[in-house]
Length: 182
Image (tube, rainbow, N blue to C red):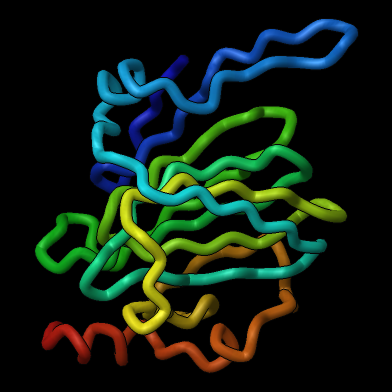
C-alpha cells in the first residue's frame, strides 16, 4: 500500500494494493500491522456503512469531547470527501482538504481525531464505510455549516441534499466562538 501525506497534519490518503482480473478484484481494507506502520495505530471500536444517493451531503460533523478517528472508503460509487482541521493550536487550524474516493481508485482517507468530516455523493449512489476509533455519541455531536464562506470548501455539487441538522449547522465563526478563539 502507498501512504500519502496531505497538507493537514495527520490526515493520510491510503492507496491499498488492488488485485484484479476479469473476475473482479480483491483489496485488503485493514491490516493492523501495516496500518500501524503507517501511523494509524489507534484501536477501532465501531464500523459504519451508509448508502446515499447523488447530491446528498453529510457533514461537516465531529464529536466535541469524544473525537473519533475515522478510516473511510467507498465500496460502490464515488464521493468528494472533506476534512476540516478544528484542532485549536494546530498549524492547519481552519484549513480544509478534499479528495475523491471511488470504487475504482479504492483509496481510503485517514481522518485523525479532532477534525470535522463530511462528504457529498458524486455518483448515482455511493456506499461509504467508516472505521471509527470512538463510539458514536449523539449527545456529543457537533457540526459546522458545509458551505461557510470563511472555510471556503469547494464542493463539486451546487445544491446538495442536506439533513435539517446540517442545513442549520453553526458557522465557522460560531464554532470558533464556542472554543473561545477567533
